[in-house]
Amino acid sequence: MSTNAEKVTELRERGNECMRASNYAEAVLHYSHAIKLDSSSPQLYSNRSYGFLKLQHFYHALEDANEAIRLDPNWAKGYFRKAEVEFATKHYEDALESYRCASQLQKDATLLECILRANKEMMRQNKVDQQTPWVAAGIGLILGVLVVVGDAVLADEPMLTHPVLQSIITIVFSVLGLMLGYCYRWYIKNQRKALLEPPIDLLGDGESKEGAAEGEEKAPEENAQEETRSHTRYSKAQARYRYKKGKS
Image (cartoon, rainbow, N blue to C red; front, side, top):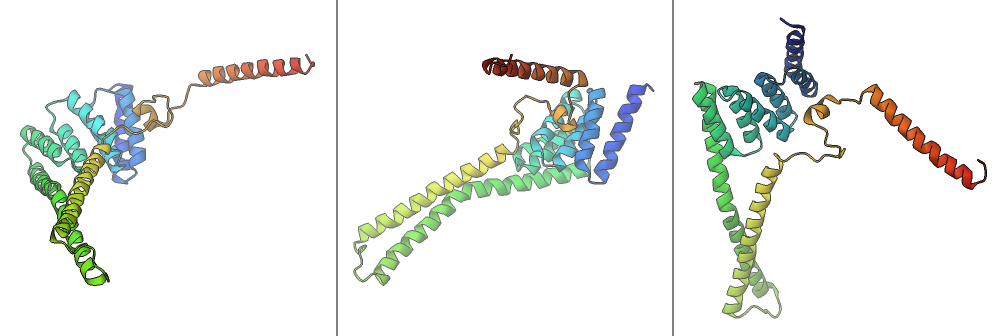
C-alpha cells in the first residue's frame, strides 16, 4: 500500500472516530483532508456528506452526495445520502425518488422503511399545502362574522345593519384570509428551498468548500509577499507625507 493511500485510510478512520464521538466538525476536517489526497473516492464524499448533514450544512451535504453519485452511479449509499439530506430539508418528493434509486441498487429493509416514511410525509405535506389557503379563508370568514355580530351586539348604533353589507364584510375577510394563506404557503415553500441554497460567501473571495472546511492558510511565501507589498505601499505614502511636510 502506498504512503498516500495509507494517509487517506488514516484520515478516514479519524473522521469515523469523530463521527462516533459526535465531533462532526472535526470529522469533516479529516474527510476534507482525505479528499484532497484522493478526490476519486465516493466513500469519502459520502462520509463528509453525513458530517455536513449532522452540522445542518445542507447545501454542502447535498453537493457531496451528488459527487458520490457522480463518481459511482451504481452505489446505493450515494443515493441514500442524497435522500437523507432531502428528507431533512422537507423535500419529501425528491427524497422518495432518491430512496427508490437506492433501493433499486440494493435490497434492504431499512431502505423500504425510508421509502414508506418519505411517502407518508410527502402525502401529509401535500395535504397541508392544499388545505392551508382554505383553512385561512375559513378563519377569515369566522373573523368577518364576528365583526358583524360584534357590531350588532356591542355598538350603540350598529353600522352593519344591511344584509348586503354584512355579506360583503364576511366575504372580504374570507378573501383576505385566503390570500394570506397562499402567501404563507409560498413563504413555507421558499423556506424549504432556502435550506439547499449556497451559503452566503462572507469572505467574498470565492473560497472553495474544501478550503473553508479545512481552514486553509496561505503559504508563508505568499504572506511574505503580501507583507512586502503592504510595506512598500506604506513607505511610499509615508514618503509623500514627509515630502509635503518638507522633511524629505
